[in-house]
Length: 180
Picture: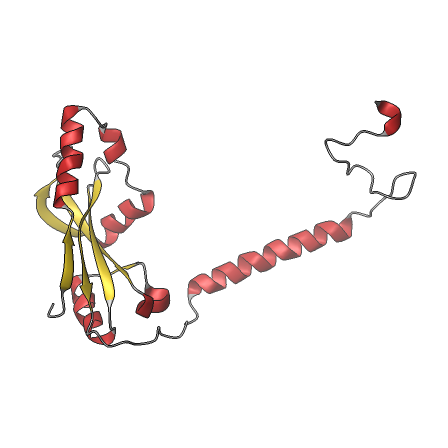
């Protein structure tokens, strides 16, 4: 990748976390707390490495690369492979890549390094394109709204004897004057 710059290595932080686990200052449960979405992403999109897990040593860790940047628009925060990153560095001006290692056996995860990619030219974010996620959101929103409308239309509102408030809808802190 010809435009790789501004690299940050997190190996000292990783080493400090592992030393805290060995000393007993931190538990392995605190360090092995991979989010289910992170584990699923590593399982299906992660690259296998030749490094063993530093906590459980049962198997190799996997690497995931996430991209973030203003110029990416709705594509910011997605997992990308190395060939996709090489293609993206010519299309976008600047974006940051975060590489995370994950163990599928014990849940160990840690940020390894991050770096900037891109050709350095300022560009506007791409126009928002309609995705299948938008359809799912619209459908669930419409169904929920229709359900609420049907519930309010099916129940007739009865007013109390004084005609000021609906029956059965009193505040928890409210008690009528005669019942104190």
